[in-house]
Length: 435
Image 1: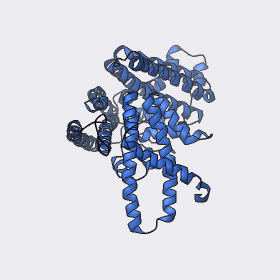
Image 2 (image 1 turned 30 degrees about the vertical axis):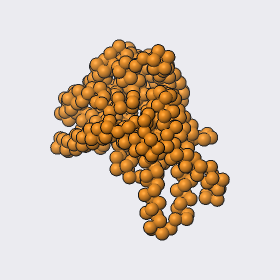
Image 3 (image 1 turned 135 degrees about the vertical axis):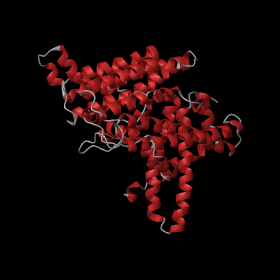
Image 4 (image 1 turned 120 degrees about the vertical axis):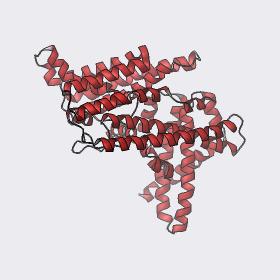
């Protein structure tokens, strides 16, 4: 099964680990106030360029070119025009790169280069930073440099004004992973000094290291269980449910480990909690809230907590922009941003229906389930159903072939989302009564 390939140590984790000494060095130099603000921007930018070349090779140009072009747009266009043009160019460039992946996987029937896959992942993160910065400029949260750039000044002055934006788009702690860091937080961190004592930093990094070790040990145990059992190709009836749950568990453990490692790298460089908090800005939120994800009985809450910084970015970029069907548009855009693989299109649209059904089901339940024994039973049943639905969606999204997607859809596992779809249809007629 091609899904099992994800569970081996990913090269991105190796490159993230190799970046730790440089992140700690940057933090130390900031604490000691050993170099100027421009030198800090250059250090982060040079580290990003070196990490891109090491991890992506010649494919690094696919990340450096849009970052450079986005900087030009930000520095040249008027603030109200920045977001439209930056979004159009960035998503067009990313879509072309994803089409190259489709051509390799589906037409040539070849396995894509690992460096190219790392490049696509970094490009998706770059899209987050570009659109987040362009929205900040349009909303007046960040002062645009376009006026200063258009004035007559030397080339060095132009470069100095563009340097913070270019450095933000390519700074190495967030190049290959990590929660979305806003430009305000980035700028405040670079221009200020560290406010976190070394002991607290060591404790925070040690705790994250212990979490990663624990998750990796669980992965080893669960991988043996999955490898020893049947797969979706040869499972029988309800056995397919156990296969789906355990396989999705491996996916979740892999994501949790990567998110904690990415968060630790940002914290090592000084971009974690407690740094660069601007008035009115949402606080730093790590991507992995494992306790909530594993205990919630609501699909909607799981959706908000899964990869939290990306969920918050999608809400701001798509959901809050108005228009009809905001939930469906958000998940459709998420499928586009992820690459529009068949499994992703099916999985994200299914996820949107599950979230919509979740709202109606729990609204209905809150009106009619009053006694605490019934509430406890209801919570247990909905917890199990929620986890099974998420497992189904996760395997659909991660399916890289139509045959894998068909095996999933043709198994007993499809009963779980079908139940929610039926309830969505039945309860949708009484939506006005619930309101």
